[in-house]
Image (cartoon, rainbow, N blue to C red; front, top):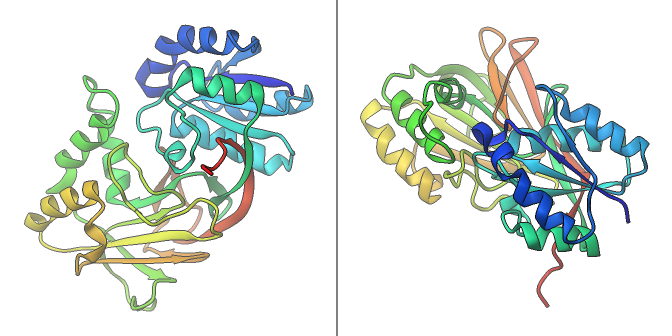
Length: 301
């Protein structure tokens, strides 16, 4: 089975470039020598389509959630039977935490890619026409992503945590109407701290945003943080790290196939760590069931 490794040298603030020699050694030991690197931002789709044109059956992507998400979307939208495998070389590396394959173990991932594992169909999500693999975030999440660029000395999950703490008390909130969450009046606009619609369990490298989420259940998990006193935000942030925030009275959660958000102007949102802006004040977030084939480790017997 043909295997190609795509890697992003810019992933994880340069971690992709720092670990590529180790990745090459691990995969080379299994006879996998076909490596292609992104040359510029947004290059992932081109590399995926080149791999498909060359008949590659397993596309291994070494990067983080942003790189993974772009490759996953390109592969899913191509409708190819090729499958994707994940090697952690980014900041949070969250999507792979939903799979059994050991994305951080280079030797184990090389063996899995070379010898074959279990093919698994997983869901993706979309906000209008923009697709995502792991998470879509509105409100506070956007402010944190922007602030992350101003935390130059840290790497890994500490980047998101530091940025979140810095923005926590000053963020004014997002006025929006939310549809698709039972108990939330979709006709009434209110100040919200954040809406996260998650395909996977974690985001930001640290936060267990949707502890019960599954990437193959045909649903997305919407987690709505309603606006409340700024003093109460810090304890809630700690609870989100632990995954115990869903029982908080100002947090609402529901797993479903479709959600809507309406603001006074086109909202900014993040998909897998990448900023986007909606074309209109109203957006629809929906699940795309079974859209992506992935290479996973076999389930324990």
